[in-house]
Length: 259
Ligand code: NAP
Image 1: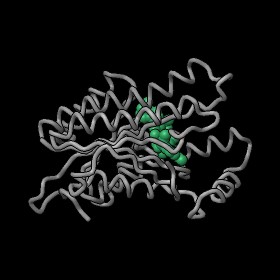
Image 2: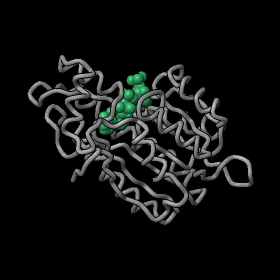
Image 3: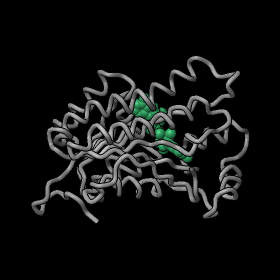
């Protein structure tokens, strides 16, 4: 399926994927490009985006890499302006950048709390506020934010669970405010997806990454852990032209039911 492909008369739409250098964000960037979107790959360090940008270009797509910290207003405004200059006005936004600062509540520091709130919640707010200007002007837009099954509560993740639940309320509010401008907002809540983020968790728990994955798979109804591409498929749907009547939803991509 190709939506808004370059050439062929169809309008090419421009997407921003934050945290697109690796993991889930890189898979989403590649998948959206395969759907004919031009993609700005935004990550903390511009150099780290090179691999994703090259993968898109090798597949015949248009991409640019931009270094920005999504929790900083100036960085966000500059990243969105640069996207508009280099690729065209962005009307698709995937709020994917994320960090973990896990700790049990009694050991969680102020910094652990503030850092997670800044990247996930403030980051999604700043990016969405900057991109909606272009979306409203175009009368079309898609915002997808990465929540998590941790939104339902997870030991050692009071900060992360709070922001991932917060992103669900944020998403539903954007859906209500922006719907009249042709803009939808949805959230994807992945379960256990094999990325560097969980490699770090395994290291912290002092188990090998392979044992960590095998242990997690035993608890998942489809009997495997998720891959970044599993999440990218959901992002492809939510950002497609044909998903225009689907808004304010939270889709659990977790290999089994969650509620
Ligand atoms: P990842 O492999 O750690 O990738 C996250 C990316 O975000 C990294 O490239 C990171 O850059 C970047 N980033 C961090 N802080 C940033 C900031 N302030 N500004 C811009 N970019 C920033 O993580 P992932 O597993 O792909 O996760 C992606 C998203 O899915 C996150 O929101 C995560 O919470 C969510 N999620 C993941 C899972 C899972 O099982 N993996 C499950 C549920 C939800 P650096 O490398 O430079 O730090």
